[in-house]
Length: 92
Image (cartoon, rainbow, N blue to C red):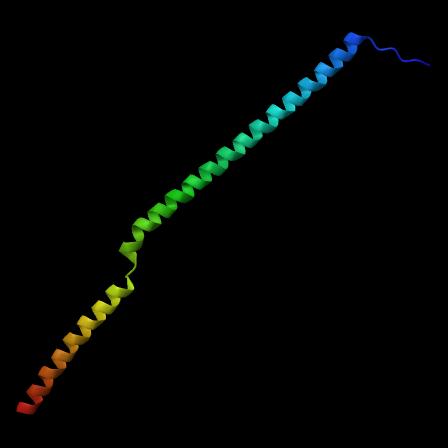
């Protein structure tokens, strides 16, 4: 039993196989491109949220140095008021 295949049939099968590989390759590349676009969109939205957060951060939170300075000024004022009250009590 012998199998005879014409040369042009082999060429046609080979071209069909190569064409299907190219088609699947293009399909995979298109899917990867869509996924990359989706990831890029997510990254840009996260970057925008981070930039908004950085812009709001100084307005919503107090720095440590500012809190220490505020507490020092407040304590100095309270000490001055306490000193005045003591002088008033000593006079009376």
